[in-house]
Image (cartoon, rainbow, N blue to C red; front, top):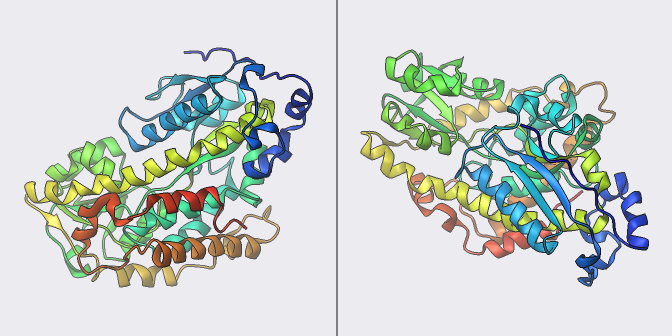
Length: 413
């Protein structure tokens, strides 16, 4: 299926010149700092010609990632008074996830989902950068990885960094960062200590998850997502590590009803992105509208991610299992992280100053962690994790403060 050919934006007078000059400067400058009538709320959208952008998604309806991109599209169209619309292809109908970069370079799509892990050769700096983020966030735990962690990730892609430079050269610009975690560890049989887990086979999806779970005495097995239900059912694997949405939608509690949320690293870098060609063609006012439209969509994404967990305790009990306290397991995982090599020693040669990149990431993470605990009063390391799970997004009483912090670019370096 081929996306509809896009019309590029043209506007009258000085705005047309601004569109031609948008380019890299527009990408790197915060939207709130760009010049233009739109910043003052006085831009006349009737003077801009219609723009249609092709959006491709690999996600199914109802997925939190689907809600995120659809909310953003709606917000952009509303903010631009109908000037910007989207030709939308959901559920992988336009291209698979592994072809996201080529789909943008060939103009098959303008906006799509990119997971850095699918492109280790094309994005070596970004994959290293993901490890730096995972080092910074692995001890945030539940629920703060979905509160401070998401805020950190949004700010991580503001300003300047080696990863952003690489992404632009690869043909795209991150628009809406996504982050999930900690993943749920589900097992067929009850467990409470590392001794209980010793010798079990656990389905994992990446090397970081392999290290974390093997530190608990298990053996990591790279198993495709669509094969793990049968693997658990037949005893080929005994446990599995997945996002909560996968656990629930895949019916995994039927075959692995014992669930824990350890202090483990978040998923690797994942973003809704726009091709550099499409972005550089847009007038600054449209770029600003697109960036500003992210915030309400990201707030819902954070809430949805937390609210999924309100279902898992009851579902686990119904399946004959329950929620396992991660407290006896977390110290073992922490020891594994403490033994890991300094990320600076793993940096690709193209990263000129790894220490600066790491310092920047850690500073943003620390700022958001402090904001979450001190301002939002999010309780961390609660003795009863079931209480946190059942609270869902209610663990934050003032989401407007969280969203305002995003808008004000809290922690931006």
